[in-house]
Length: 234
Ligand code: APR
Image (cartoon, rainbow, N blue to C red; front, side, top):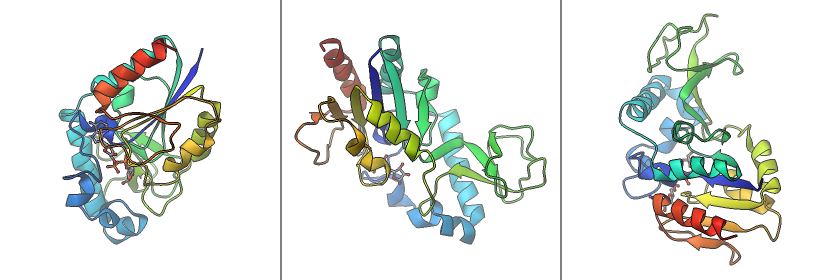
């Protein structure tokens, strides 16, 4: 089966109602990114960070659903070996049915021990003193340790990048959807794709990319449908 490797950013979830980060009205326009998504910000004001991600997690769970782009990518699995590499912390690819999803910047539905990072808890979780979707500086796991969002903050390493680069290198088709390609190392994945491998880039406001890239200047829902058509014609 052909291996389709898809690198997604906030744009793939935009039509589900998840705000992007740098578009007009994006998340970083309303929140100082270094206050709510950096290691120094967490050290300075952990309660603010717990509240920020509690709000996002509740919105994701109670109001947000996968859109036709997530569903279209999941549907490709019937004809291709599809691997999703996402910068997104939402669980919309999984909820749409994608079975192989690699998160580069963490997962909103998970928290982890502040002292033992290998202890990761998917919310809601009975092993924590807070049983619901929200955590705080007072939340404890069964070892008595505090917890933090399982998110890669600015200033922290991106542990899954090596695996993502390997996937990009193995791609028979590489697809980029809904990312401004400004945050590294994720933005550098394209450089791992073997020359001659077809590359598609779906974004209504595409940034400059090398001339060999097939740009589909559409929103993700329409772009993924067009991609599926072009793949069938291959
Ligand atoms: N369909 C497809 N793409 C869209 C849509 C849509 N409906 N709407 C907006 N976009 C595109 C924008 O044109 C932009 O290129 O999605 C991209 C969003 O870019 P960013 O907001 O910068 O999001 P992203 O690239 O995912 O950010 C990368 O930065 O803040 C960190 O950790 C955070 O993972 C995030 C990383």
